[in-house]
Image (cartoon, rainbow, N blue to C red; front, side, top):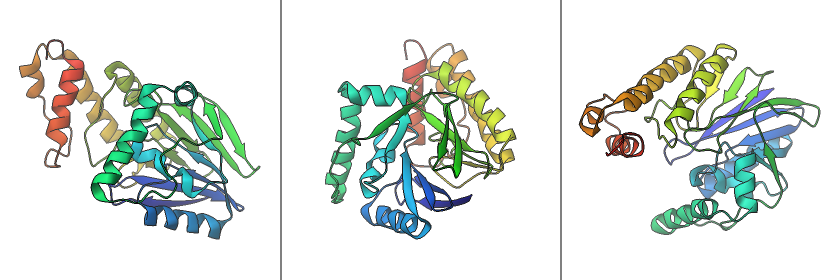
Length: 260
């Protein structure tokens, strides 16, 4: 199995192409048109895209499927259901992409739409792609309720979406679920050779585990904070000098700490 990793100019967003014997699975193709063209060209060199995988529904991870129109999209069952039922949050993700593109003059030839052919997946499901790529899927809630990770055991690679990024602090929707996911990812990292986060460079298992433990300490500190003042004093696990991270820390406090 071959692993090709592409890094977008927006937030170091990671796109991963897993391939074997001409069969390709593309995880989170992102984001700008020329970057998507490069991903599609690489897939064409390797063979064909048998599937695109969304690790979650946030707009910076889902717009690239139109560059690989022949491939069905695999995503967590919660996101598949939200799309099917016209959920307002699913519509909002697409609108956020539209607003970003309009602001920065980004052309989007494929438009703003969810894929027509979708396969909803749950925790522990497996897929044998064209008899050549064996994948195991994980439910990874906490950053979003529709988080989906995957393990390609033959390559010793885990793609974990928006967790364990060395570039940013946790963006937390559900702190209890986030902590549970971090425990799960520590176990995953022990059994692979490389962890690929949704933003930033790939990680060795020891690096991934260290980030997971630091993030777990951060989440638990937020959960234990008696008030907003105490929560604001919690040190960031990393990326304190990255623009926007202190504001995201305040967002986490408002989401977690009572009466913040």
